[in-house]
Length: 562
RNA sequence: UGCCCGGUCGUCUAAGGGUAGGACAGCAGGUUUUGGUCCUGUAUGUGGGGGUUCGAAUCCUCCCCGGGCAACCA
Image (cartoon, helix red, strand yellow):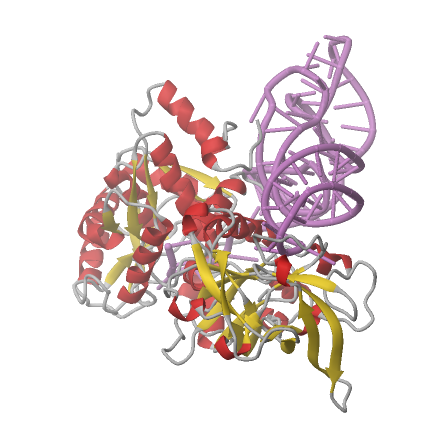
């Protein structure tokens, strides 16, 4: 059976599922408790969606739960705003957490853990500067050297650490280190820093603390406190696992286990909160929810559905090798879902006037058209048809090749849900630019009751000029021109921002929509026929609706003519 | 030239001693009142050398390549 199919249909297991099933079989666990541990210092992106889908999916599959735990141990970069947006994104993706927790909930307990380590002679206060500590750390190929403060007595350490908590010392003047092994081949075991002084208010604990635990001091212990069975993180945390286990062992905690999988990378975009933040701060994009951003909020604004994103996360798989997923897979998932749920509408982007010469002036007929051919329950709508219409400029060609199934002198096409028309004439201005196309319609070719016997190969979308509703449309392309912006920047010694695609946003301030669009709800997913999938933007006003192009339709014709 | 991971179609991902399969992308057709959807067909892959075995992507070994590790970030 295939993998890369939606999880409900998938039977092959990823390596974490195999581990879990073994644990369950051998009775190591009766149930599964995972956690999703974002740091509230930025917005969630599609890479987080992979982790969320994995963690929540595992719990769901094996009958357990998932805690949402904010890893908020660094007050300097973390805010309530980020917390709120992260919660919103997880919910929007369709997941429900068992408990909402914060590493900061455990600050008191973590402090006690530190005291415990000190008393066992497994932690000490170091007065060295960060430069000195770095120098003593050695290098991956050379062992480190002991700090002169390494031999302080437990009593002295405890006294000093208490005074650190009480705010007696300045930032950077002292830190607490675990006492492990300065010559370990694992750099993280060379007496890692576990508590540092930061005279900074915390978004939850306020001014209560001026010392904060580091990631290593907090993460595994939080897992253990919550009795997380499987703590799943990305590959770069692999060297931390030894430390993770060390704390659990020395503090005799619940034996949570850490497993690592490869993080998601995607072509033509970046997946680093730090760099995404730079795009936001430098005003290169419109904000964290700019529709070009790989953030959950950006994708949402762009018109991606939660279903499409979850489907994507199920298809990309979970493994340990580095990977770069093709953007086209995400786009496929979007089309797959949007095709089923989007309302079809006709919108002309680059209009040219079409005159139906044998249709009486001032007369209109309301024609019926299906809202979604994939879903009968979506119903029908009326579209006014008259003598003067807009069609797409690119749908007419004076001197067209044989396979061009659109308009040209003497050619016939179907106007979608209306009549077959035949082109008799066209008008150009003094610059040679097409201004009018003259056609006659065939009264017996009406959609649904066509007895004309005329075969029209092509079908065009159209909008009645007197009824045309002006909208703004924003079309997006990949954010970067380089497939791997960060790597390329490194290679060419430039900034990753040098590879921003200057044409990643193209706005049509005047596109012409059929009247139904004016009355459609603002959270509706659309397909503008023969164009693509579109979603209303938050910039819409009562005067002007704005739409974002989520993704184009597949276009075999465009491809063939490349 | 330390330690730790990893290497299967273009991109992902299965197969865990017994026919290398699926998805996306590609290509070629068919259907179609969206050049959409749908349907059919098709090409492309086990990094390399030795070894074990009746049989190796899978086990052993050497090599090659990629990634990670020297934040008081997570």
